[in-house]
Image (cartoon, rainbow, N blue to C red; front, side, top):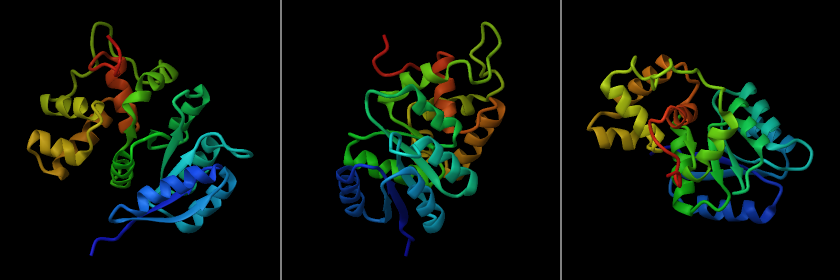
Length: 223
């Protein structure tokens, strides 16, 4: 029997936590193991419970979600944190990337997308909502390795690795990339690792940003 994915909810709004819990508790293979109403409590509970995924609000009284994310990821390399944000994003929220967050979700995310995101992050993938991609790019512009002038920076990649990068930029998980490219999931993981290493990127989220910054794909809504 497959072990359930364990999730911790950290948000100062009880109604938000209730809504998230209802969606996740109804999903097979996922268990909400705890809740916290502020960042400091979230850190304590995360280090005590060691969940697979923490869904973390950004704005909370006292310790915010960015600092809480930093403390959790520094203390535990096995707990993945996803930041929950509103559509009107605060620029400082993108500090979450540097704090070690595995990605961003909007609070109005559809239930099936939330479940998919939890499973994706628990598997070691990063996520970023297409609706916030442009804002993430703007906030992180200039923080990634620059490509040579007149280049998109992918010359070091094989054709297959470039296909994998484009699939990552489109938001596909390893499983989805495997299905699209008719590869095994383990082979996809190898390709992803090589892409990140060759482009000097920390994680999949930065790979998404890299692809947009270098014109390999475009954010939703951009002409």
